[in-house]
Length: 346
Image (cartoon, rainbow, N blue to C red; front, top):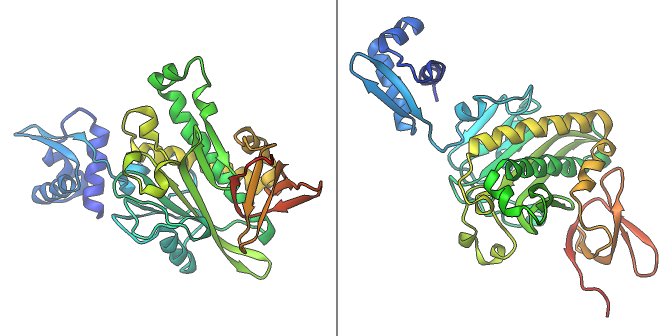
């Protein structure tokens, strides 16, 4: 959106419930009354509900359910993350866009957000279901001082930020907390499935895809892609996702303010990534383990190259690697892979 409508929107927000006259706006910004009217009409066309009173001015009565930069940046509590924000009504993949921006020199923290994706991607080449105007699909360019072996742990650190944001939403909802009372606390329903999925009561609500470019043994940049199911109806998921996925709105029984969720996630993610950059993943590990519920369970790990191993989860190492105890007593470490529960031997 161009500067004119953006500044008019800012003036209407500052005015609150007071009318903001076209004359005052024209004088403040040095533009004609006709231009003020055009800017207001531009905002209305984008879904903003603006009332006009003859001789009384304009009032902002409502904002659209869109992830416009103007909505996310309004009240965003970050220093560097998402301060540069690229919005798309639709794109093939926010990760692809962010990679292109990174190659063109985009700064650390540059974010991409889309209302829908036509070719959303998950890990191991999986498709990520991305219906429009319902969820959050975002990718962030990161330029940490990082060696290649340390990069995978940034996926786990990001999962902590997503899980904590989801848990906060559940805990802040009084009706959900009341329904959960006597069982587990709302925040206890949120867990992380190593390395990149966030679950609510065992069903996936978010996935993370970390991709990178390297210079020798160092990371040139990371692209962190995050998808969160916010308002999608789980009944509309494709058959292969339906049994194992959910959305935040389905859990709460009420629609989610997507821009507010994005602001909360970006703020929490900035703090987690700052901590990870300062101390390494070992400083985040206790928070990850608090949401990791697979210790001691028998699992199957499918490696990136196609091999598989079964064993019992021993724990998570300081670098984010999954440590597995095999049947013969040996242990193996995995920095990447796909984990699923395996049957216990008879």
